[in-house]
Structure formats: structure tokens, C-alpha cells
Image (cartoon, rainbow, N blue to C red; front, top):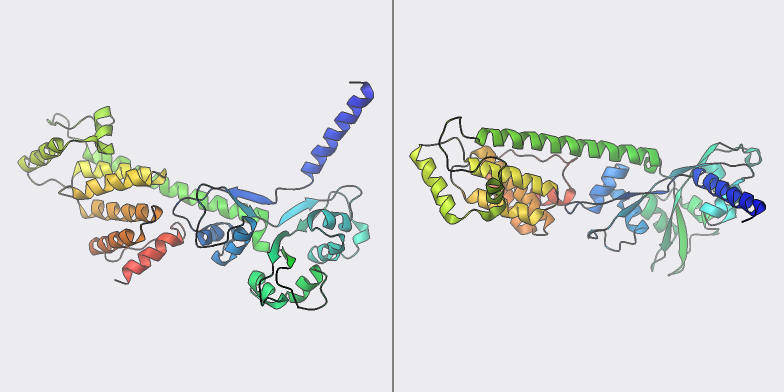
Length: 359
């Protein structure tokens, strides 16, 4: 490759790097948990469950009540573009809003008084677009109400699509600019960060409780026991469901000989392990452990309440809401005033919980 060609090659690379640096990512990526709903994901990112419409249209989801499994969702955001030398609003509008005539919209959105006096390096706000296919009976007023929850922006929407009136044809495609300040990239990232921090805090607390429960379940020094050492392969096998019925009988008999004990150490370990499995997304295995724990004798109210709550969560994640509702009812028989945190609990779980409370 000649020297001239090398110079052209590196110049192209620099131009590409400058282009990439000039704009920010227009959509974030999010992997939903099995027990999350689209409305909950909207609450996490935008601060409101009703804004799930941003997510459904961006990801081509027809039914907002059905969460697609095993996908990475695109979370669209209102982002910021850094002007470069030679930029004008028409050029930016053509590239990001699909039409140079929408430069007036950018001027309005960014409060630019004189579009001819743009300075390179300045940041301007760019909305994200929703491609809307008109259904039978829809007009501009109805479309505005659908995406803005108000008819006030109808004139703006009409001008954005170069329409003289509010009449729309069935099957026609129009573009809806979303310039919601709550959907700004920085705000969305900050909300997600707070949510993840709260989740981590809850996970760390659950681990702390599990360790405390495991410590409590250890036999006193010098005490004779047939139970395997904590952390040994035998104990792991027992926790994961490999214990035989004879082992279980032996353990129950040992408890009977020593008199009433404060709770059941085996159940405590099973519940702690199941809680960890639930957090890791192993819902079926967690459910099996919890069912075994609840079959054991001598559970404390604290252990039973935790087991029934996590079991209900697992059943919701496994799309078995009726069984989950049953467990929530039994949970409230143990803890009548039990409440779930609406910020850390998915709406899918809360819905089943509220239904159970009605009973």
C-alpha cells in the first residue's frame, strides 16, 4: 500500500472515530428477569409504568402483557449529539429524524434562536422516533393521546409529519418524536443504577441472613452429630435434594431424642440455598428445595414465612400464578401484616400478592 493510500486510510479511520465520538448510544440494553413485566422495566428506566409503550414499539412487541423470553431489550433514550464543523440542523435532522425539513423541530426543542449560528462542539438534544402504523379509526388526536397522553402536542405531531389536518389513512406510517425529558440517557442510566444498587443491597442482606442461619444451624463444639460438615460435598448433596428418606428419618429421630429444638437446621439450610437459587434464576430447583423444607417438622415462623414467600416468587416466575396465590395466602396466615416493597418487587408478583390479600 502506497504512502498516499495509507494517509487516506488513516484519514478515513479518524473520520469514523470522530463520527462515533460525536454521538451517544441512542438505546441502552437490558436483560429482563423472568419475574419482571414490561411495566416494571418501564418503571425502572423511565420512572413510570405507562411509558412501556416506548419499549414495546422499539422492540416490536405486539402484546405488552407478554414478556419475550431470553432477549436483550433495547431501551430507547433521548440523547445528546455533539455538533461538528460543517453541521447544520437540516443535515442533523436528515440523518437522525429522517427528514431535513424537521430542522425546525430541532430548533424548537433546543431553543435555538438562530440556526445559522451553530457552534461546533455544542450539544443538542435528539429525540428518538417511534414508527407508528395507523389503525382503523385513528387520527392525529388519537395518536397524540396514545404517545403523549395528551392531545396538546397534536399540532407539533402534525407539523412533524407535514400534515395539513388531523386526518390519517388506515395503514399509513407516521413518525412520533419522543422528547420526554424523563427518558434522557443520563436520567435513565441513573435510575437503572439506583435500581441495581438496591437489588445488590437486598442480595447482600439475603446472603448475610443465609450465613447467619447457617452459623446458627451448626452443632455446638463437641456435640455428636450425624449431619455432614457445613460446606462438604455431602451437605451440598443434601441441600440439593439428594438426601434419602432414611437420612431424613434419622435426622427427625435425633431431634426427638434431644427434645424440642429452636427450628429445624436442615430446613434453614434448604431455605437459604433456595433463596440463592432464586436470585440466580434457577426457579425450578429453588421450588423443589423449598417444598422439601416446608415438608420438614419444627420450622420456626420466620423460616416458614421466608420459604412460602420465596416459593410464591418462584411460582410466579414459572408462570404458575394460581399456585403462587395459594402460597401467598398461606404466608399471610403466618404473617398477617406482610407487605412487599413495590420498588424492588415486580408488578407481576405484586398483582398475585394483592389478589391473595383479597382472600
